[in-house]
Length: 151
Image (cartoon, rainbow, N blue to C red; front, side, top):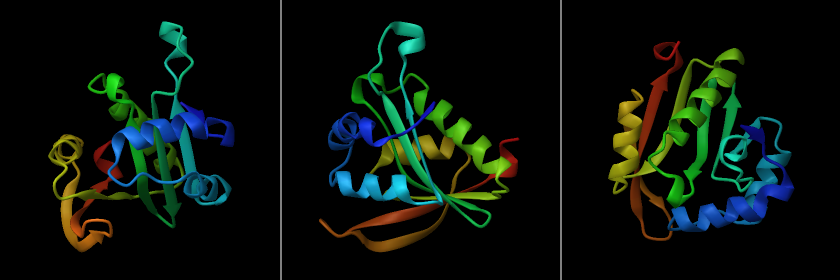
């Protein structure tokens, strides 16, 4: 896991566009890279397979004692290899060391694969945001995980 830099954005945006109905733009990532409460990490598998291409990333914010996951994705051909779980585990450790007690995220109501994944990590549904996704009016569910469940 490495800190994301502006030089990584072309590869991050490539994964972003393959992963989301409405991908973030470069300006959104540049804004996160300059935000003091934002944490941005990438994963490169190069250490074990001679590949320096980015295969996953996460963007989250720590505000008071809360972690808010804004984005996480794995390149399509690298999915189902445990990368997202590993990346989240390392991110949770950073958050825990910063005094975070709970992790929050929103996910599309129709994204069954993501919901199933987060349920396996002990996230619980705590609410719904109606018409959250502006492009199609889809609702989001809000999920939360207490960090003390991890460590």
